[in-house]
Length: 102
Image (cartoon, rainbow, N blue to C red; front, side):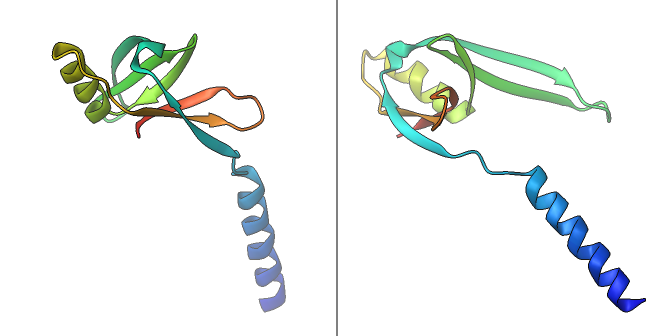
């Protein structure tokens, strides 16, 4: 009985590990002019709480971006300054996934 429980636990762990296969990523620098649009989307979750998600359009792709990064981009535009940004992208497809502060 104990061996069966151990086997079942091992199989569940193996299934969980294969289901969350890690995407191989790399980070490349981008110029803030490559961000064509900032999108803020507010939805309500199942508990009735409002959730705000932020996205940036980079090279035609929708990427997640933090509020801090958006605030810094806005500040730099206001004072005509440059900002060091990066994009985390999929190594195989080169599709951008997330905009980050470099």
